[in-house]
Amino acid sequence: MHISKTSSVKIPLFGVIFFSLLLAAASFYSGFSFFKSKSTFTVDAVTAINAKTVFAAQKSNKPELKFFVMSFCPYGNQMEDILRPVFDLVGKQADIKPQYIFEKISDLSNYCKANSGDPTQCATYVKNQYFKDEAECKNVIAQNLEKCQDTKEYIKSGDNTYYASLHGRQEANQDVREICAWNQTEDKKIWWNFVGNVNKSCTAQNADSCWEDQAKKAGLDTTKITDCFNKDAINLIEKEIAVTTQYKVSGSPTLILNGVNFPPETAYTQDNTGNIKIGNKVFTQDKYRTPNVIKEAICASTNKPGKECNTVLPDPAGSTAASAAGGCN
Image (cartoon, rainbow, N blue to C red):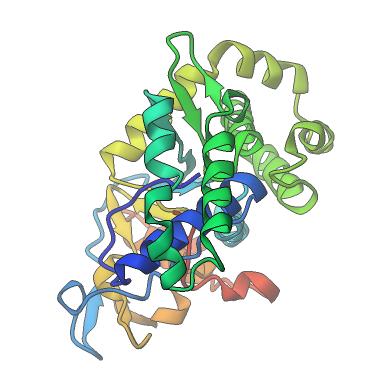
């Protein structure tokens, strides 16, 4: 299911239609997502090549870093891995808090018709080689529509409002469970352990049967989480939607530090040569999503940085190191 987002990326119209059709099927049914390179912007949205973007830190006694994710967005999971050592180092100096991205659907019928593809355009799609023939095109669109209209794929409120997460119902369920765990856990290390366990052991296809063991391993009370889900899911989702709407967030991951996007979009360039100045240090575009750079941004936003800010956090290893650009939208 696609969460819409206005973007300055230039894609041919029929390419948009084609990818919308295929990604609607892939991300809605199979848990795949569209990885959008955040390094691609129109020229008027970026600074000149080699110019430094200065991070305009908004200082406070205890900075608030909101990180917006979906529980099974791969790049969101990578950001959680990146933020874990940041939390371990400066978690007492900053409020590092997860936020979850949901979509609210008031009219499911019209929503599905608008997002499942237009069968009257199949001749055009075939002409542009997006499908081998009109029969295949119409079949894909019909499957899209049928799946979209399946109410079991959503969390539903009493007034027939539907709530979705990009990778399907089980991701939406897990989003809520992770919110419940956060709210119930005074020691946030337990929450971080829980999310780390889920990221390693569960998927958007088995989360409903997988999460409980991971929660128990982390030391959480699964009965309390289930009770929270059953009683408060809609209220919790609405609160998340209010926050994502306030900050105009739709992509996972997104970082908001004391109300300011980090890094700012002006720090990216089309040729990946962007850089950003934080305090008296300059970091290149490929380092923006690394623990040390995020730590530097937090410390720059603190009125009285602690000695922990002098610690240099190492770059992530393995797949997490590849998260410099991209997200689920």
